[in-house]
Length: 121
Image 1 (cartoon, one colour):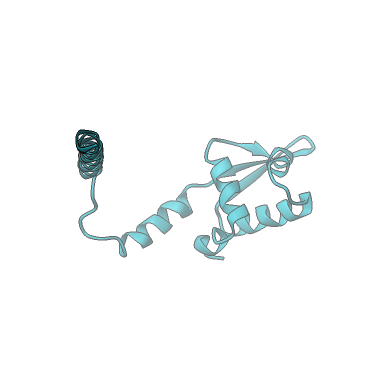
Image 2 (cartoon, rainbow, N blue to C red):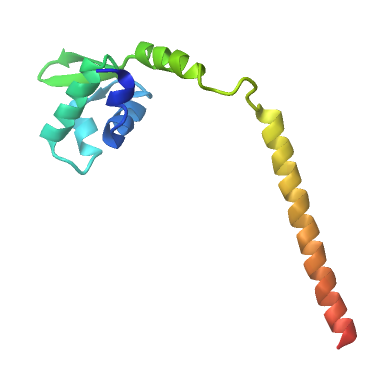
């Protein structure tokens, strides 16, 4: 299974996000979701078959870890579809600055309108 297919399911995406922080036991993963443990086991199997997670035995427990290599391959594949020039942090800050100025102008216009109403009244 292609990693993107495995990540199409929201529960599997949430499991991958949980594993991004480090290894997690199967029981702990299952407790975080309102679905049955067998359903979580099936999700983990799909993620394992897609190469997105690895597992190891620790006594009677299964410990899962994220394998980032398929994500890097997916990212490289997606790169072909991204715009050539991606806006960076500076352009986002410029947009925030513009919105702040718009808000100030709108407040001034509202305050000016209120002052005009009081002067006319």
